[in-house]
Image (cartoon, rainbow, N blue to C red; front, side, top):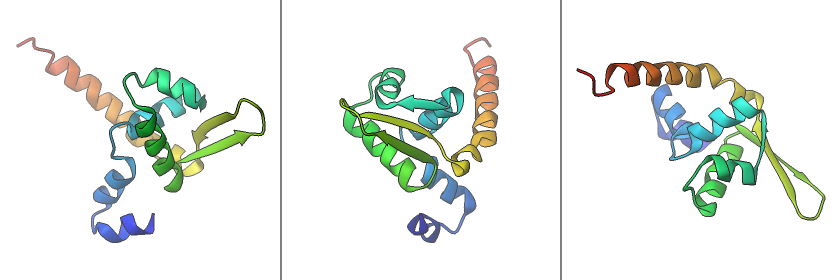
Length: 112
């Protein structure tokens, strides 16, 4: 995470570097909503995501301390993802993004 804070002089840039990515915000949102999700559940929710992309996004979120990964020593492997305390701290921002998106949809739904 240090490289990201060194790369940007702007707090907004730092935030976007942590949550920017094709699926990161949506992953965070569903982990907030469901609390714990397994890899397969995330793949079903994120229709069209490739396994490589999902794994990459999850690893980056984990490396940045927003998501924790719990592996159970069973066969077949069971892996669960959930938000860390730091990940939970971004939820107010996601709730505001949700509100903004709802307002945008109402305002610009093609009805002028």
